[in-house]
Image (cartoon, rainbow, N blue to C red; front, side):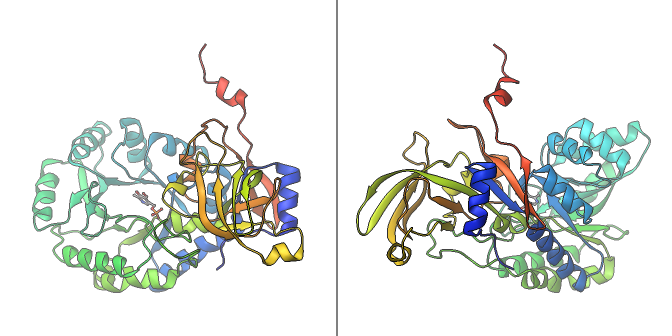
Length: 407
Ligand SMILES: Cc1ncc(COP(=O)(O)O)c(C=O)c1O
């Protein structure tokens, strides 16, 4: 599967009809990616589901489309929980360290999949369940040796003893699920394999007489963008078959014995390759026969992930044939008043001039949720569906900001 790029004709349509800077998301490709991930897991283990990490790409139009295809929301805040309810979601996965009582109350009544992050949540859920006279089935997040360890319970030799004690102290809770999420932008599937291996070893000691009902393996697979320190210009979209093998092979015996629902929570790998930001050159600061430095009309407030990732670039070709082949070591600055507002350094690009377009690729994950109206309001978002462009979110205006201001 290929990442999103645009044609010259599409760039001209977008500039004329939607203005730049503007984000572009290819909903068809995101849907295909969702189906590929789901199929890769279902082919190996039928009871597999893909849930949507809302924080990765909280665009209602995109989430709605994927939920039509069967994806279940994965939410980590009241804000995201309400967003999922607005989209009429049936069952949700409730994660994160900040589950409010309101979310938990509704989640209990709705039989959502609640994955407990820390000790205090057991007490609160127990009390809330007691108040509605229910016994609630919950999952517990474990932190494995690979990567992230600030969430959940350490998966060490004491964990089952600890959970058995917790279980017996909370009459209105039944621990039936396990959740892990080991990190993000993981390119080497061996990391997932090692996590799966550690998990299967731990789950052999599952201490309860009932079976595991869900095994939620989180997200973590990479997209196409290299980190700044990596030499690659653009990675291929990661293979989902290898990814599914890495998780399922080590866990096979656990899946055979317990037959749990297997949940994946892909974020970056589902969205990152299929979103881009179309911008235009505002001015050329310097240009000679070998180098150029340009200012774009979009900066790192719109692409905060550019602090960590050197996103691949696509751009208008030079206006004559000589220029098309000539490439210059290019620095791309954004329009913000910060030295660090830089989207590219030492990147070979053709000669570009004021008004030429630059498409920043591989920005479909975490930029909608983490962009800020710093100096400039946030750009609008265009979706591509069945080859047609349409608004998913309008450009932000001063009016949007004044609505919340009290003055
Ligand atoms: C619990 C959980 N699930 C899923 C994801 C999505 O991760 P990724 O975008 O790396 O696939 C995250 C990201 O932080 C997460 O915390």
